[in-house]
Length: 98
Image (tube, rainbow, N blue to C red; front, side):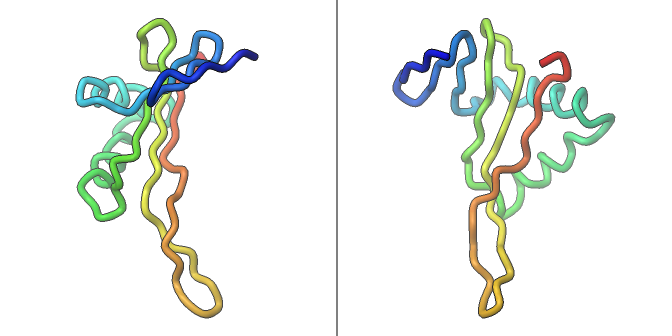
């Protein structure tokens, strides 16, 4: 599989990964509902409003159509000695056809 770098995006074959834009929010909601069911996009809205949100949100596009979404959110790991702050690869969703 060929891979090329395009600034802040990566192109693999005909898949392009880009930082999320405001114009993508409705498409992301549709993808989450299609992948996980009715009203499941509300938890993403809650994450966006929380301290877990780090603005590290990306969409996958094919032919200009958003077909996937992933974000890195703030989380904590409970180690034996202390809580450790980490970035968690979540949430992630893909249009079921893909």
